[in-house]
Image 1 (cartoon, rainbow, N blue to C red):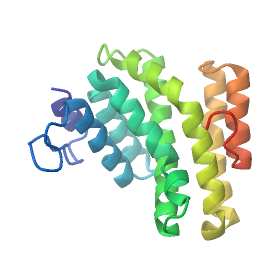
Image 2 (cartoon, one colour):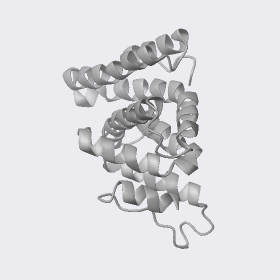
Image 3 (spheres, rainbow, N blue to C red):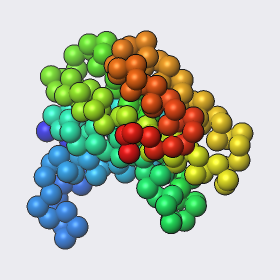
Image 4 (cartoon, helix red, strand yellow):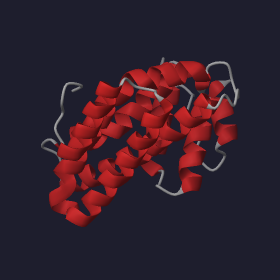
Amino acid sequence: PALMAAQAAAPHMAAPRTESTQENHGETEAAATGRWLRATLREATMESTSVKGVMSAALGAAEHAEAVASAICEAMGAGAVQGEGADTGVNLEATMSGVVALYVANDILFNVRKGTGLVSHEDSIRQAMVKGLPAAVARLGVAIAAAAAEMGRSVTEQLRSRAMRVLVEWSTWFLFPSDTLAEMERALQSGAKGVFA
């Protein structure tokens, strides 16, 4: 049911595979949803329609809140993970996807905060994301800093600025204690893992 809702919310995105294969034999629907959402985030762009499509798909799979929140938080930090000893091109792509994932997280938090009431599991997504976002933002800061040599200072500063605008917005919503938010801002500015890593 959640996979069908996710596909209906974002029909232009390929639906997650649920049939049994050697690759995903015995995979739960929650695991398939998480895998599909991670792949969808890799394909998404910073364009508003793309971010909104991923957000709609994520909210459509809200009954798997932990898998949805985990996939988004993992995508935010993928550039930092990929960047350690991996091909720089993968790091750049993953870093850009990390910023897209931050935008998706922001849209989800905004819509759930505003009480759109699409499904009863939405608050579970919000709670899981709020728990995982500090470490994910710190990893995104590391990824942006690591990609600076390849992307150049101008592009790096644009990405960092975009990410910082999201944190400024979060500060007005009182989602995080002020010290947690300050630590996330420091991590984005300096590229240091901080206390969350």
